[in-house]
Amino acid sequence: MSAAPARRFQARDDLVELEGYHSPQVDVAVRLNTNESPESPPAAFRAQLAAEMADLDWNRYPDRGALELRAAIAAHHGVRPEQVLAANGSNEILQLVCLGFGGSGRSAALFHPTYLMHAQIAALTGTRVVTGNRAPDFSLDLGEVQRVMDESHPAITFLCSPNNPTGTVCSPEEVAQVASLAPGVVVVDEAYGQFARWSALELVNEDSSVVVTRTFSKTWSMAAARLGYLIGPAWLVAELDKVVLPYHLDAVKQLAGRVALRFEAEMIERVRALVSERERLATAMGRLAIEQWPSGANFILFRPLLPAARADGATARRAHGHAVWQGLVDRSVLVRDCGSWPGLEGCLRVTVGTPHEGDAFLSALTSTLTEVLA
Ligand code: PMP
Image (cartoon, rainbow, N blue to C red):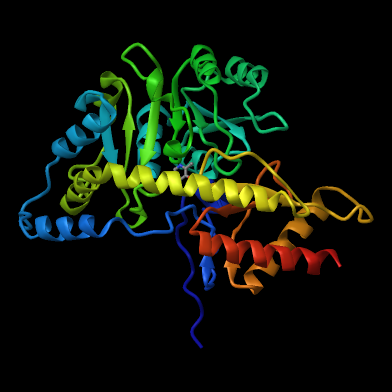
């Protein structure tokens, strides 16, 4: 047996301490854990994309500024192309914002519980993470926002609306208030924006600090393509343009985004169907031994209730939530166990899928709850 080679060097100290982002992928029949669309894009999208891919200049680097894609996204939102930046998923957009506006000596603020990658991406870019808490009903607590702003003067403030994993939608007044309190850029992560009734896009203008990030991964049924974008003031987009690597957005992806936008009517119809399925699920879940929160997204956060006879507390709740998660996996249904996220002990998050998947989830949840509560 040969001994393991002695390690002569190691990664950055702060990296060694980081855990990375994990969402277990278990082999099950019904996957409702990553908020993807349950359906493929329209057949005509695939046909048009395949046909137009044949004409790509494969030996050439892609359009470096992704100008046609930016123009198409801008037209879709009624803004100017200079206000649009596209990247490899909205996670990369968040990273670009941290690279451009965060970094050493600067901080990024966020309000728990929220999307874990905001903290992770900020930390990876050397940006200090400062946090506050949302109110018990998961709405933004403006007093807490003020406290964090006063104490830390963050260069970046992350909001998420609808918020992952709670589903909470910010009101126009809340976002406007945060923008007036925040000394730096306010990123409203709208990965699930189309599922909500209001978008912070209306607050974006040249004199505002608000930028909105969106993705093709959810409503556009294109998680495989890894395409996201930001809408913001043109001056800010110009700064971010300096941060991107040359030719970071490949030609196939640029084309896929442009072709997808031709199918807006189909996308809107899918969103409508998912919203009505979400309401059906929420109503059915309301009859079970769970607590749930109103969602403006394509997922629902819920917490299985502990039986009155059992001792309550964070550890008991977490164990109970995990037992229900396991019971669902045993019935071939995968949801997200959010029990280790700050403030979410015992909570699970289910993605809204097809009605067939919803029925499988409801039946698995009903029998699991009967079993674990017995
Ligand atoms: N923001 C939020 C709130 C998300 O939930 C996700 C996906 N889980 C993302 C951003 C990243 O999406 P993308 O696939 O565009 O990188």
